[in-house]
Image (cartoon, rainbow, N blue to C red; front, side, top):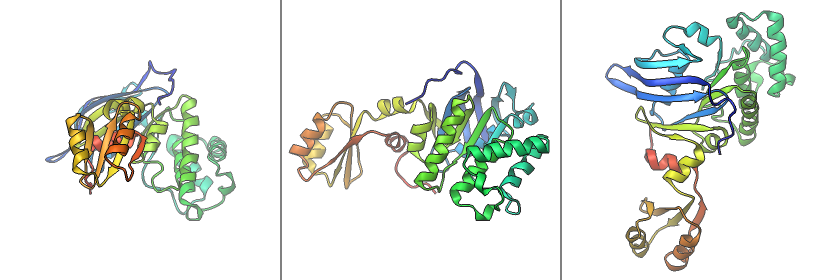
Length: 311
């Protein structure tokens, strides 16, 4: 559920009909959205949907082809240098310097923002403490676990006290404990008023962190809204899964105009009411049992973008 946002009147990102083409390929096709100060905003989509291209335009790595993009009230085509001093970026790759220690990675990166060494050292100490890496200050990057590396990349993105933090799949490949550690730190940053924009393939991560989000596919925005509202609007409250459904069950579902997906060996029925439908189906049509669970953001994602693999 979206959290209360006391900064909601200030727009930090304003995208208006933003496009990105690579020759004949349109990667991002005239998308528009706003992100408000102090909220966490998510961009979701399958592989090739255009979300990473969108992220790269937001921090100036890839120039926009068309439309208008403002970051912190500054047109990105006119004030990119000023914008970069006010944002932090955590990219997908752990592009840390392997020849430097944990602390040196932060201190050297601080030079890009003209932060004096004494101040950079104090800030590095603060961030390493915040992200639980103080005991690793003298270690080189190769000695860290995957979770520690991701936390160090996050610490580096915070070295300049950014007003906007852009995270591209910040917890990919992490174990559950490491993911939750990152979540806790992001929630704390958000409580301080830092605006966060992230992409992720983890639907539970988006539901947990995001106040609002968009789901993209083929370069376009399909839906935008609060996670819980998107679930209620596009799926309902509950989901019933039936393995090896019989013809009688299919006929019943079709005749009553329920929302459903027929995957052949499995039938997924979307229920907006209570568990009465589940009891009827389980007692009359699938006595060997069916699964009754709460609807999730993943159900919305799959229903809107499909279930085929994307390479």
